[in-house]
Length: 340
Ligand code: SF4
Ligand code: SF4
Image (cartoon, rainbow, N blue to C red; front, side):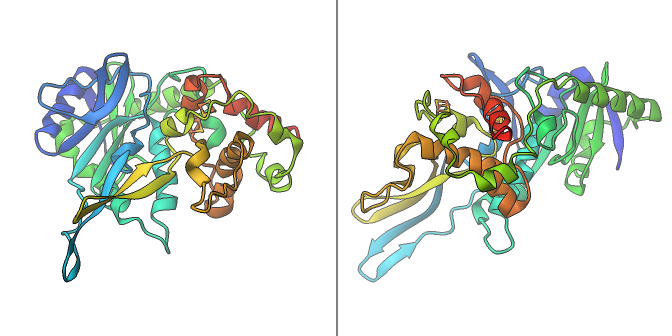
């Protein structure tokens, strides 16, 4: 794996140069938020961010996406050319927890049997550049409890680590190596490597928030009807903030918008926190209250995903902890489950 060094203040220029050649998604300041946006000529990427409020999963799984277009004719339905816009792209500067989320989303959208061509095309055509967390951004971060690390190349094609005045640039995959021309020609030496390893160990140590995420699966296996589920949801407003901000949540709805002869089939994000999410056409709703919905959220992340894909569907980013308007904390829920 090739490694190079670039000066820290060169990073924004590299992103902008790349954006002249391909679509680059990068963190950009927008009012109080930092959002991953397609970088335009007059945008300034903001790499000194802690983490973005919105997870960058929308690059592969947009909030709203056109799946097909069609026209009713006298001879039947005519479908337009396949709508699958997946230009060559670079996702520049994501945090390691979010890069880890892409590995988890791949397990769902790119299975051996079921393949989501819309997601896969974007994923295939996008190079992920991860910006390591040399200091944990928030006290709510708990990546080390869910198979992550603040300095990790999991899900990355290129890993950037701030080692002082320079970034160590590690080309992790062949896809990443194809962008090597943008990163100068200063080869990294053993000292840079040693410095990175020291920083990585310190950053890992600094993640103070820990949860027993790996202990709860056998407990969840046996406690679907435990009275515990009557307690956790009581404050929940069913606002969906936790699921919309979560990098691993991936529920969606599909609907058709039809005028007289033209139709568009779209996929939009949905949330298991919403009462209508499971409401059937008959009027029956198998998840009648927020209790069932919160149980589903916990079960999906810490049991069902392990059943299906042998992985926990949480990367410990802490977004749901930080932004839940009524302070429901998934770390406490998992800890409480471990004591059942
Ligand atoms: S963010 Fe909080 S209040 Fe909103 S749905 Fe999630 S748990 Fe409920
Ligand atoms: S469940 Fe919460 S902490 Fe875990 S990945 Fe989702 S938003 Fe982040």
